[in-house]
Image (tube, rainbow, N blue to C red):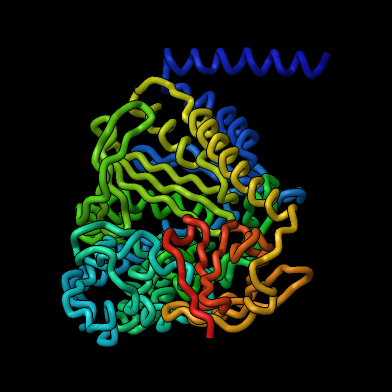
Length: 508
């Protein structure tokens, strides 16, 4: 009886809630946002989140929700740290624009002026400008090379060297392709121009002056923090805590950890032309430089039916939405998703931080908040996104079940397990070793992912079902190439979230 009563009350509240939004959208922020967020966190299975809304130079809302870690009582608060992923890019682009304002460099300088060793396709990259690094127009495919670069033990110098080995998919400056290692390369210009590393520049010129005292530039410092959230992902449909990603080799593209309190200070300054009170912390010209369109991403269709442009500035996506110009970016790393949205003409800023990488709530909520301020109809974006998310998940689970059913049939590989063992090499990545496990299973260990392995189970023939120990890398089918009864190589594919292309490893 109690359950029925609670359900009836919830349904009544939802009806009233929806009706209120149609009659007075301004009430959504004041009266209904808490209910909306808490309901969404439950539906999306998000352990913890933090949300901030800034309007007309003031914090309208700053609130933390949920817990830091599944199964633990500690609650998220306004100073709890989240990894913000690619929202780091705006800090890196702003830092370089600040150096331009200080006449330490020009965004139109050649990269080789500061990094003479920088190459593209093995040749000196004398045609690449700093600006090109910051707007993803080098000619690479989105995420190209990231399995080699992301969450590995490679140094920044080694990653930049390997970036120079990649083969362009498109002619230079003809097509947008999101290139994380390009932002690393841009960040490594800072110590040449400024005399101190990227992370020190941020601390001295952005974090400290803005009062972002809890913010960390390096991911290695996250586990040492006392007030930190824990990353989560879905493993076979079950929400689980996972290890922190180690991103300091790629730090300028995605390593920052921050809180909703500190991020509010960043957004307040950006919406106030770089001022904090009377102090000009960030030159207004530097902020404007990052918001100028540089490249065409494509068109985007919103859930309200609008189709508008999507451009890229320097570290920011640029969109038009119902007559409002948006400056925005998402961030995603192992166990975290975040969103920062600026609407400069409306003096509106939105920050959303979550500690799971399996949700689209962060995206739905920002549109809901914008619709409220833009006086647009209520659409319940979170339910629309959730329905699509569940349908996609069901499709993926069905495909995975077919593969697991095949594994359960105990199909034997075409060759003896020992035939597949040995050392394999990829020119970009480096080496990988295959060893024999129990029964006909195999195991892969990668040179630059020392804490990660792949479990391979036979699917018959020369195909194996691959399960990564790092769940964010996904599951896949690895086919071995065989000629005249001899194994010549293997094709390796990680989740599209990390890299869309595949790697060919040749057996030594």
